[in-house]
Amino acid sequence: MPKWKWPVVGVLLTLVTLAYPLIVYLSLGRLEPRWLALLLLGLALMRVAVNRTAVTWGFAAGALLLAVFSWAGNAWMPLKLYPVVVSAVLLALFAASLAYPPSAIERFARLREPDLPPEAVAYTRRVTQVWCLFFIFNGAAAFATALWASDAVWTLYNGLLSYCLIGVLMAAEWLVRRRVRARIALANTVRS
Image (cartoon, rainbow, N blue to C red; front, top):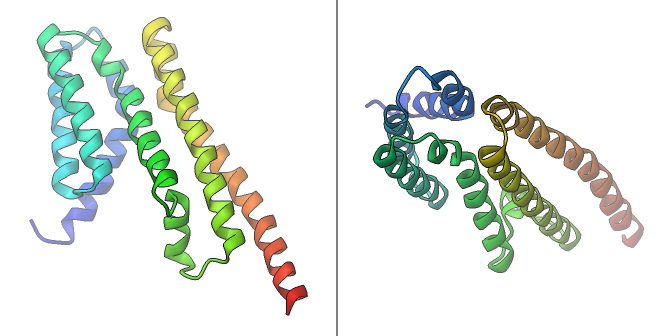
């Protein structure tokens, strides 16, 4: 496959992954779960083919496990647990980065600003901790909706509300980051 097509495949995979809860919901009563398990497995394998990172391998391993259980039991529940796997893998990645610095958010920040002052490094560590808390909350909510909520509520939370919460957290962090940057810049000006 030509090199330019890989980013296109990555974007399509991301869109299908984001739409996954809606695809599951629309498939209920129309398809057997085992066929959707093949879709989940196919998405995981394609992700690994496009991007071989630890996170992608984590998602693929979780998807494979859920797909096997769904296929074997022809059950919907393993398919509905995929958002829990996503939160668990992201939590593991972010938490590991706290134990073995630099933190995940510091790594992202250094892509834009390679020379972060110590105050910014401390801030990125705190933001990584906030994301860890978010992934715990989001995974718990995804688990609860899979087990005890209706299919419509599961789809609403995992296919819309969780994305809205991610957007709110990103927007709030952006606003806080602006204030922190201004405070760091002022402190550096005063020291000079």
